[in-house]
Image (cartoon, rainbow, N blue to C red; front, top):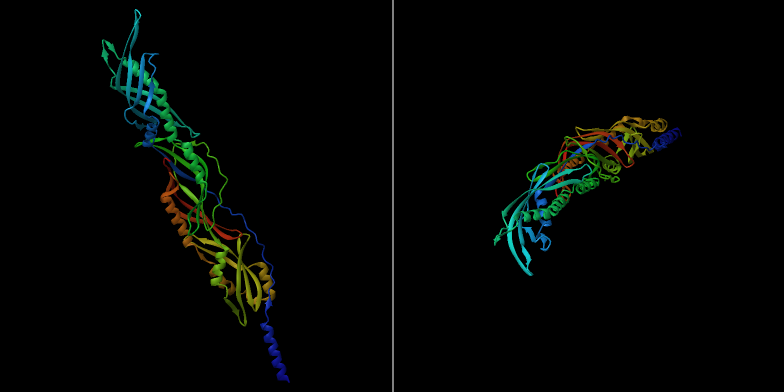
Length: 461
């Protein structure tokens, strides 16, 4: 009888030890701190390029066929027609555009007299060639308008329209004066209109200003995005070189890039007037974010942590599921366990990023206060650090691929990236550094900066 009682007692003790303790632990408050990321202003070097050949083609297109025609001989005893003999040639020297226009001239003149009731008249025709030189000065105002002033500086008769019949000479000076005066207004307008059309800096800069504010996806595979938020525009004096006019500009802007999450568009900012400066040094600091979303962490947990069993003597638990959220800037690992103890425990730790190894890790990893208090009463054997150390290594994540793609995508884009027709950017990264970690409701965000130089070229379009 005593033996039977002993056996029953032993069985009861074993069954008692196998009974699962139910964990009922209050969940830490889920909250997120506003990230304190300092936006660094970059200066993007910009160059607007006016090709003189485009200007030349525009002027020639404007002035074609007959440039001037006067068919009324009664008012001044002269009929006149003027047209281009060859295409107009343009050169640039400093802030002056010099233009040479070769022209053909046809003139008709003569006399008509009435003597003793008899009318005598005789008219003569002659052809000539004249070359006229013009000079246009131009200046970019800080409201992006170009002021121009065109003047005729010289003319040379290549072929004088001369004819002498019965002592009557063709009035060369009169023809020259009429030709030049007739052309002055039209040529001035042609040159000025062509310059404004081909040097419409305001239109170009408005296009650039608006386009750069649109977020751009520069790598689809890793979902890398770039966004520029311009603040103001700088300008140095215009430079003319090798038949090109260059407007050296600088755009002060905040540049952001992100991996894993599209960047949102800002409200469009209107192009401001430029600020004159003596020099511009193009350099940039791109604010960059690498997003590690909780789905990715859960995927890692499913492969590496979920299903692992922790035992202590004759007690054991198996990790069934992990969730993640933020609490006062720390990462909370919500751990569902089953076995000798069943329920949810909460582990918490600080996130760190190592720039040298480019890895995200967790430190000061421990049970949160309420979990500790509950485990002391119901499952103090779980307080052993071995349980935490079983989870902690799998919360170290290498971000080399993601950061490598940021650098690669950014350098590829900076190598020769076309934002839109006629607008390209060129530059190179010099270093990458991450210095801030924040947690939002869906992911961990590692923030830093990409530093280097950047220049934008705006060609004629």
